[in-house]
Image (tube, rainbow, N blue to C red; front, side, top):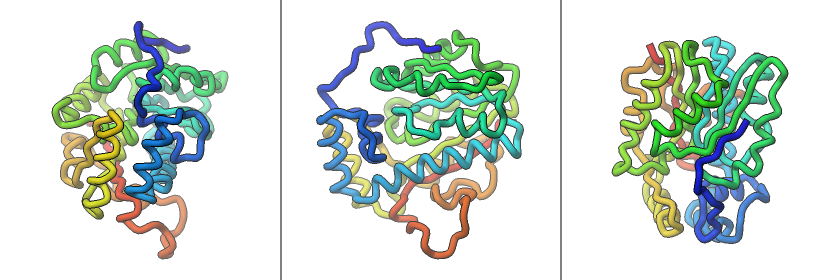
Length: 271
């Protein structure tokens, strides 16, 4: 099932973060304008492809933890991006075939590939809605209209690599609170977010590239990212550099340096 907001057309006149992210991951679903902007960003920070891979690895680990340790069976993934396997529903349904996932993004190109997000198990369900995180009420209305999620049961709100594209003037903390208020007790919030804490000069340059490309961006400090979890029970190890949040393999000194990743991650439970 897919839904689309009226009047939304594919804009290839300026770069889009989802398509730049596709370039970082080595995908083919982007345009020249996205490639140009992505190359400038990589010139400013050559680690961006590694950051993109660690972002997805965190999403997979967080989904596993929530499914296996907290019994979550429903996800709302906002800022889905262009599908890259394994997608969230594939991870969730590999652990719980009855899992339900609704994806949301504001780039019409993602809609074009949404059928990849619909390949659910027979026991579970998936849906895609086109919506913008900066308009949470409209987005949540579209999510409810799918009928996929049961809002009497816990839902994991997945906001990976999206909140650094919501600047302070758009009130990101109020947006996250509004989204969480729509979800029942026992629901979860999973976030990762770029930070300037370890290499401010480099990340200021990256932000400048995105701003110049027409995509406003804002990196945030550890304390600013932690604020998104106010009132929630943070799972161990709290808000930490992405690759250090419940790492899947041993930490033997060969893992990336914190400054190379500069992506903070955390998961909290609504009580």
